[in-house]
Structure formats: C-alpha cells, structure tokens
Image (cartoon, rainbow, N blue to C red; front, side):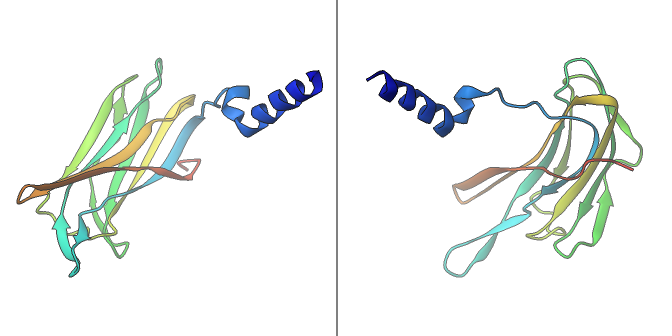
Length: 157
C-alpha cells in the first residue's frame, strides 16, 4: 500500500508540474516585441469586414525600475510601415503604463496589422506586458479580444 501511495504522489508531481515548481520570472534588459493588431475581423457567410478599434498597451511590471520604450512602429497587412507612434524614446516609471489608440474607422492596417515595440532598461528587470485590445460594436452586436505580444528579439541593438 505504501509503494502505491508513493507511486501515486510521484505520478501527480510529474502530471502537474505547476505543483512541484515555481513559475520562472522572465527578466530582460531589452526586447523587440511583435504585437498583432486586428483592424477588422470577418463575420457571416459572406465574410463581411467588422471594423474594430484597437489599443496597444505597454505596462511596466517592474516594482523598482523604469523602462524606456524606444519605438512603437505600426505596420499594415503587407508589412509596409504606416506610422511611428513614438517620435522620441519614452520613459515608463515602475508600474506605469502607456497606450496607443487606433480608431475603428482607421482601416489602413488591414486584417494583418501589427506593432513592433522596442524597449530597454539599464539592467535586467521584469519584462513588461505588451498587448493589444480590440473592440467593436455595430447594430447591438459587440466583439472584444486581446492579443499578447510575442518577443522576436531579446536585444534592442
């Protein structure tokens, strides 16, 4: 009976690793992050475009250190540059946030629009949360969702 109990405990530890180890905190001193932006989604059998407003959100999650946002560059569906939303670097204090808004009527980005966000810090810190939030409403029908940023380069050099 004792062997079965021990075997059961070990199998649970391997089946559910979250119980056996702490989540690793990601640290970095700078990254380049890709963030998907959906200017519209397609609805119905005829796949009609449903325009969405979008917000790029950058949140410094470090309790003690500022980050510097180097750029927030907006690209369209074909990878063409549309606009740099930060003409100069922006410092974000610990736990501070910054956002960029794309109006629902702005269709320039198309379905595959995206931001490339570059940030840096003076030392390794908690990585910021960089994501987009899309929302739209038409004729009483609404839609909203979030897209998480994806690190595509660990250095900003």
